[in-house]
Length: 244
Picture (tube, rainbow, N blue to C red):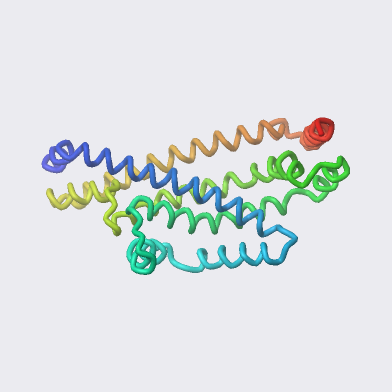
């Protein structure tokens, strides 16, 4: 134990750098996943068959294939096919973003479809454009429903970051593995990893809970009054219509 702690202190700069790589992969991968989630989720609701077909094909492909294989393909196979090689961190970000973006698109599609039809009809009656209808009326209500599911996806993405070790990325797993190999303290090393990932996941959960409460306050859901939500929706719509 003492040998592990002393080695950990000696290797602390590398461990800290590895932790930062893990955080970078989580944040950048989640941002890419969020962007793709909304892109393909909204495309799935398009009236154009081609747009819906493209969305369905991409989503089903990345949901139906293993994240491991996607990661290895991007890192090992794609350079042979295209001649262009991604760095390990960028490779992980792209793989995480594509995979979890596919799952997230279903969250977006389901949340948008769950908004009561009366909200669409009210926005149309106020002569709102499709863009303003989506931005002012539909998405604010759907977003509240998306956050809990997005929280789960974010935690899952974080827990997949040790896969970066398999493509030689200098993440937290790589740094702690180096300490473990020098000391032979397998139990202590993996207990440390469990603790660090738990703390990171709990911090992300708290942040997402704050985001959810903020989104609910904006809709007036903290008051529990459904009529207040409809009133604010109508006011936003009227404001937009008046501005145009």
